[in-house]
Amino acid sequence: MSTRLSARLSTRLSALAASVALLTAFAAPAASAAPGPAPAGAPSGPSGPTVNLATNPGFELPAPDLSAWGAIPGWNCTGGPAEAAVTTTAAHSGTSALTVTPATADSTGECAQTVAVQPDTTYTASAWVRGSFVYLGATGTGRDVAPAWTENTGGGWQQLTTRFTTGPNAHSVRLYVHGWYQQGPFSVDDVRVDGPAPAPAVAAGSVPTSDKVVFFTVDDGWQRTPEAEKFIADHRLPITAFPLPMPAGTDPDFFRRVTAVPGSSVQDHSVSHADLSKLPLEQQQIEICDARDAMTRQFGTTPVAFRPPYFAWNTDTLQAAANCGIRTVLTADADFSWGASNIWHPGLLQPGDVVLMHWTDTLAADLQRALAAADAAGLKPAGLVDYLH
Image 1 (spheres, rainbow, N blue to C red):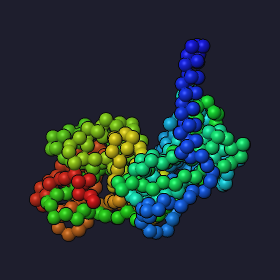
Image 2 (image 1 turned 60 degrees about the horizontal axis):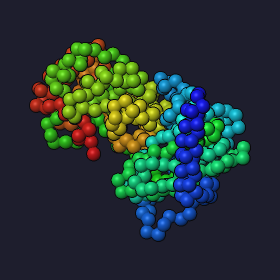
Image 3 (image 1 turned 90 degrees about the horizontal axis):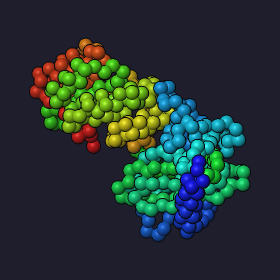
Image 4 (image 1 turned 90 degrees about the vertical axis):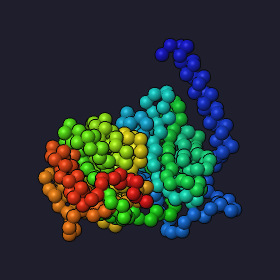
């Protein structure tokens, strides 16, 4: 690096550090102190048991199959595997902790996750950290909230704690931890976002409506054919796609094209297509939340529905989906995949029926049969999200 460039970088970083130090000196002087009582008149929020809403809070849970190489389950780290890793030495508790080593002078090594919250509700966020200039905070709360921070933990672990009350329109917040420029590695463990658990998601195989509509849903994404794409475009079919993150990330432009008709959308189908009913709630939450995040990054909108692989779900699935901000766990009541024409109730398709299909080499013909079945029942394909409440 040239002397001039080094001087400019040093000046910029010094100015940034001074600004943050000044801000946090006023905003959050007591990093590890327990939060005080909520201000008088502050919203108390919905009642219910207090639980930890963070995903993979202790960095102990394994990554799902087919997840991105080097990813931290439940977390999005700006530097990726070049900076962030789960380590098994000197954890605060358990066997693992997150260790971040910023790779460049421009990096703070931020790791974050989206947490589903309720409006007008108070939450307490905390984490045990080790290192110099480590920060914990939340954005998107609807109200200003200062980060908790520490200048130096002296080589040991220190708990950071901050409290925030969500605004009237807040349904999710972005929880973050990060270090500071040129301050070296830091570690994080035992993260908590304590507050009332959201009500479980609703399981449905159809959508209650008196409108003469039916919903075409297409899963997975491994086989993408020009014939299916052309059929969708020629017939202006609103399609609800439930792709897995890997095929969606391999060919995102295909999924943008096949969901270009108004009413179409891309929703959540888990990371690895595992039978979620065989997994504990915490691992189900990783499967759903990480797929939600992948779809949001790729397509710019956050899923509101989750399709459980194999239609396998249990009560933990409904809670895990809710913890990821998803209100509907959707199966189907008709299957037109791979040449089938199965309607799982007597008679023709009915208003609000959800039709299952898959991205396969038979999809163009499957869509044609499904459309014919809808026409025979006097129904038209419609956008699913427009009917979910």
